[in-house]
Length: 384
Ligand code: SF4
Ligand code: SF4
Image (cartoon, rainbow, N blue to C red; front, side, top):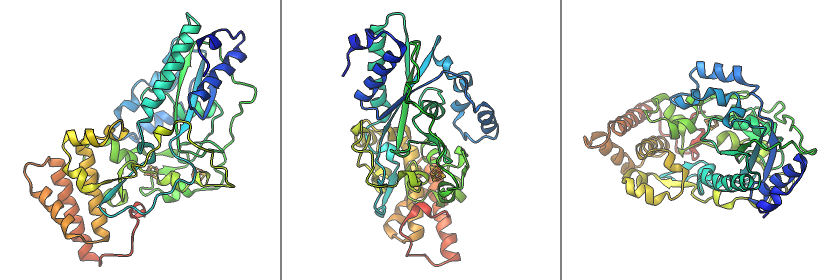
């Protein structure tokens, strides 16, 4: 790895840029590039999206709009934004059928929290640059800060923004976490950096497969997205949407699973992951385990995990919804009894009691209107 001396002694912006991008690669970032700190080209779309309420209860998305629409304002005097990307899963990463009694975890949350892994590396690079170039500043960001990361990644030549609104790198696919840092250093796009053209073409697979139908080309109604519903939404999930949640306990990967750019092609799967700890094998969690967790159990079961972004109450609500979806496919008296017990227990939080009561009501209606279909084994399309 290059040290501060190597970064500090380089004379020209192009050489300094080369050194910074090499340092990013040495840190494990699989792609990096330089974005200009210009205002967003999607300001009107963002305002319309917010005015339509598509952010759901994520009120923070309407905050710090001066930065979200003008990323150069994250750091006074910004002259460049270094964008980085690393995979949390490889192309062709497919899940086996979800075992009954388990809920699925989105791929980005199966290993160590990528925010921490990215920040540790980005802060180290920023510290080196500050030390090597006194008077210059850097400010790192990863998801939490109000930066238009996907637009910046596209601007930095990392990939294009697909119709599902996620960045697709032509060789690596879209299982990518993003981050970066703004800097006052005079970095410039290297000669080989190119804008990646949109390769979605006439494909509509993600739109067709989305269980809640919340994708229109290049826009997602987050208020109906399962990732939002199972992670960020603290209130009840509407009963008419619960069936569409399928087996997802935390997040949703359907639109990325069906994308042809995430399939294995010609043996070119991108090799091993640059930051391996962000990938993981925690593909599911036991639903009854989650329902039995205390706060201490949750902490112990999810060390260094982004799953803790969802509160314990949210995870338990999700577990009841998923149990209901599995019971709609296959009757299990033990699970029915557990849901009944929650609905009747005055010591359970109201959110859980109401969710359980709603599941029981839905099962009664479905049982009365049609025989239980025992042939369906995969819940994530159950709303289609
Ligand atoms: S994450 Fe799931 S619900 Fe959200 S847009 Fe993608 S497929 Fe639809
Ligand atoms: S599934 Fe098709 S339309 Fe959707 S992002 Fe992938 S290539 Fe684009």
